[in-house]
Length: 56
Length: 253
Image (cartoon, rainbow over all chains, first blue to last red; front, side, top):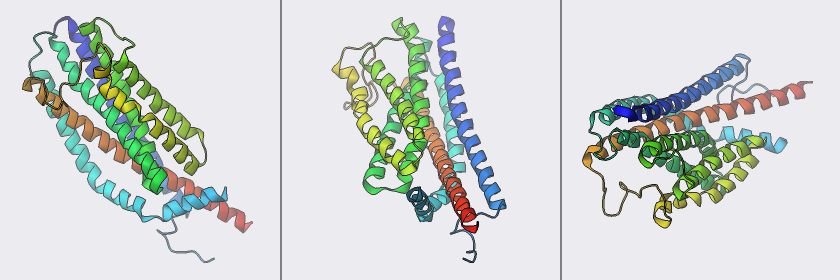
């Protein structure tokens, strides 16, 4: 690889960092939202289309 | 306030986002699997093929630089199409798509800029020059950041969607400027060698890993975009349900 190794591996390292970073970030965001939805559901709240209508 | 909550409840009444969630759950595992396979093959080809006779091993930077740069532009084009969807048809998924794509576009643009810089130093002798191609891509990066900030600065979702969509459309003028900058102006950056009218002007030895990596990056983008769109739909549902709960609570008092 010679004296250019640092540029080549540096590029691939940064690419790995950025792509893995955005993947984990997107995944963690999804997990957090799912948890919030589960908490709302546990509190008795659900989408009107999903649950039975409560008497008004 | 009531108009906003009406818009959100209308949003959640539409069947399309629900259908999107079902579809996403079905295709995401497969898409993620194919993405990983493409990356394994792409990385293997990237390091097993020969170096260039002139620039030596640094040619390998191309296999991540060029796909990132392509995606930076593809992502903005998708956001522009979404902006049209928001402004013309008011499609509920259009704004979700634009909002989910922006951070991904910013990440790929940053990657294109940084790997370009790391490639420029050994081949051009400089990290950075303010010429047409580099500057226009830097503007694209700033546009992404600006769109993210603008969208998040407004509390009312429908207004944020419309204002962001207008700026996205205005910013699209930059995409052809990036594409043709290497032909219109003198620049250190080479001109197109893959997407040309007279066919690729690049040796198959380099074209093979480049294409596989381009497919891998594109699949990664779509996997993340679908995931981020799903997150955004969930986020809006949570907001809608919280508003509904607050309204019900105030009615009971």
